[in-house]
Image 1: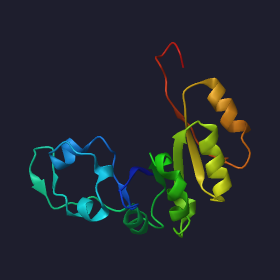
Image 2: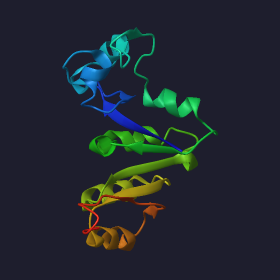
Image 3: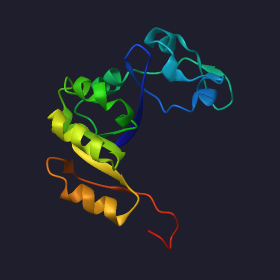
Length: 155
C-alpha cells in the first residue's frame, strides 16, 4: 500500500501533491491550488539539494492508471474536494484497490455514503467518541483507522 495526497487545480483537475510543500518541490512560495492544470504540469520540480529534476507533478488519474492491479492506494487529503472528487473516482475501474481517508465529520461520512462508491475507508481518529461514531455509521466500509494521539498518556 502507498499513500498519495490530492490537490485540485483552479480548473478542477486533480494532482498527486500535498499542498504546503511547494517551497520544497518548486523552490518558491506559491499555492499550487491557485494554478491551472497547465501551469502545474509546466512547473519545474527540484530535489532535496535544490537541483532541477525531470519529474513533474502527476495527475491522480495517471497515478491510479499506472498502479492499476498492483497495489492498494491510500488516497489522503481528498476530502477537501469530495464535492467533485468522488464522482471522478467513480471512473476508475479498480475501486477495490482504493482506500479513502478523512477526518471524522458527519458531513464527510454522509458524502461518502451518498456517493455510492464502494471503496475502503480509513477515518482519522482522535477520540474514542469519533471511533464509536464511525463504527456506528451505516453504509461506510471502514477497514482501518489512523489513530492520532495527544501523547502516550492520552490515547
